Length: 152
Ligand SMILES: [Ca+2]
Ligand SMILES: [Ca+2]
Ligand SMILES: [Ca+2]
Image (cartoon, rainbow, N blue to C red; front, top):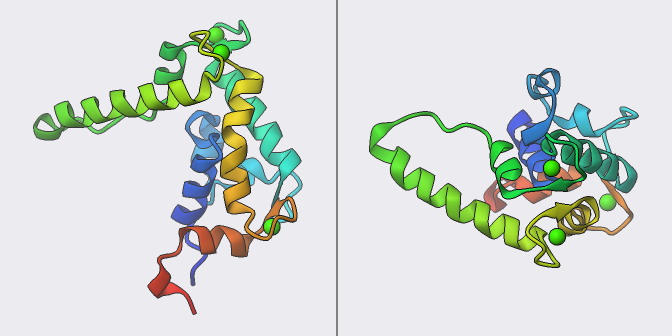
């Protein structure tokens, strides 16, 4: 049984959506349903694009059509507080945030527009869509997240 929910959640995260999904979708065990609008167990480019718009709008808390660094930071899932590791974790997260922000802010304007955000997410889709048919199916999700030794 390779169709483990965590794999699907990882895939959704890679598409940049899960961290900002509504609470109802976050409690969805697969996470796929939030992206798979028509329920065919596959994620089309259009569904991914729609999810990206939703994710963007959810992160753009002041609704000005651009993501600031603090808006992006606020979208990160909370870390469990452990005094021993929290400092290192926070440092790593801050670095990751800076890298992510710099990658997405392609024109260096200091905020991320929707088109910059979508352009930044496209490579994730392309990487998952290994046969290039414009749809991510369950097999492609599993191949992307399954360790080699788990493969048939
Ligand atoms: Ca904003
Ligand atoms: Ca920008
Ligand atoms: Ca495909």
